[in-house]
Each structure stands twice: as C-alpha cells, then as structure tokens.
Image (cartoon, rainbow, N blue to C red; front, side, top):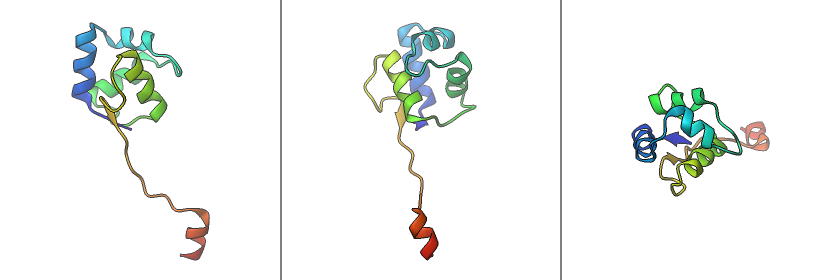
Length: 83
C-alpha cells in the first residue's frame, strides 16, 4: 500500500498524536514508532495492507483515506514456464 504522507501527518495532528502516540494506539499488528515515523517522513513509501489497516483504524479514518493499493505484475508458475 502506498502512503499519502501528508494525509498521515495531517490526521495525526488532528488527533493530537505523536509518532509514539499513534504507535501505542495501533493493534493487530501493533506497530513500532519507527515504522510510523518512517512512513510519516517519507523514508518508507509503502507498507503491507495489514499495517495500513492498523494505522487507519488507530486514526479512526475510513479505509483508503491515507493509503492506496499498489499494483504489481505477478505471473503464475505455469505462465512463466510457458513463456
């Protein structure tokens, strides 16, 4: 999932949450402050869908508000074998 860094920072500010405060509110999976800090700073630009859901739940925003799916081209084993 691709993070919209500015939206993440704006929602954190609106909720009055620091990186550590947001990390403490995340569940399933529980995220570290460094993970959230890297996403908010732009050091990391993508994350797993589980991480995105955890952050959006903690910020009480609808799914897709802060993160958008990323597409990748994946071939099945049989497609690669015949190519």
